[in-house]
Length: 170
Image 1 (tube, rainbow, N blue to C red):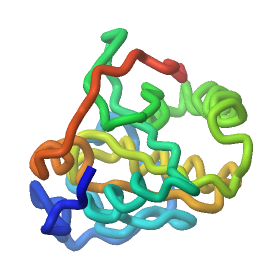
Image 2 (cartoon, one colour; image 1 turned 30 degrees about the vertical axis):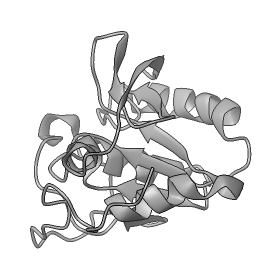
Image 3 (tube, rainbow, N blue to C red; image 1 turned 180 degrees about the vertical axis):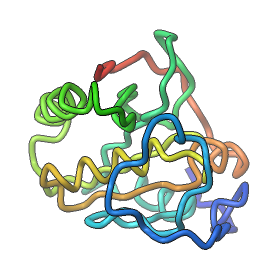
Image 4 (cartoon, one colour; image 1 turned 180 degrees about the horizontal axis):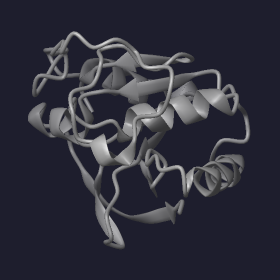
């Protein structure tokens, strides 16, 4: 997978002028403009950054698709694990999501030094931002938020693959 010539695709760099929020975004407002900065403890990356991370054979990231869907499979970035619900926020299910995320991550990335990338649909989706915040909160040290999501990936002409549901966290 060659890195794209451009760094940004599908407006992934657009700045809506929002500040980083110190809390998870509620699920009822999940599809809305996001800030350009990742939550505390995470870093924002673009398409070119992610392609370069994929090419780092010595320390490839764990890539998490956190889009929600009732299907049992979906198209994701190569080698991604689909954790539906990891970015949802609702008071009634937050404890269950957090317990299940911790359990899933113990299997997927036992070392909290492992680079972990979260993504969802695009720059107007908070699911991956919320998931990045949760991962930083539970102690992962190399958390990356791919703000452009699968729309930017596809706009760059990069491959997607059919992936089964890894886990539904609530």
